[in-house]
Length: 147
Ligand SMILES: [Ca+2]
Image (cartoon, rainbow, N blue to C red; front, side, top):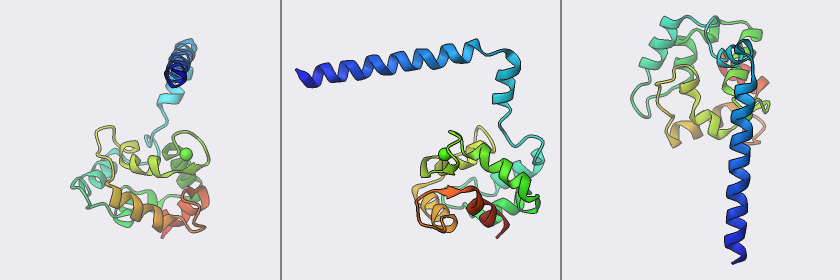
């Protein structure tokens, strides 16, 4: 009984939150919306390079971060530009790229791209997570891209 009430309460809370979020979104001006939608690599990286980089790892378990960062052109960018890229991948703007964001890494480059496999995500995280906190911080990301 208590469990059922709890479940209902949680569901109501989620519905209210969802409503709040969507009404927040719709109360934004079109300029504000555009700004949020523009959180992508457009203007930082060339579309052709992004396409080539994504095509190079289209098959599951073929992702290699070094190859990818070189192919998409990010490895050759300035520290400032690499930092900008970090905040696109850090979708919730927490200041860290967590494992779930890392899994969706390719999709921040192209909406139709695949998710990284569990193995790829773990290997990617291990390569970047120097201090072992289970997430990639901005400095760790710059080091990884420039490696
Ligand atoms: Ca994050």
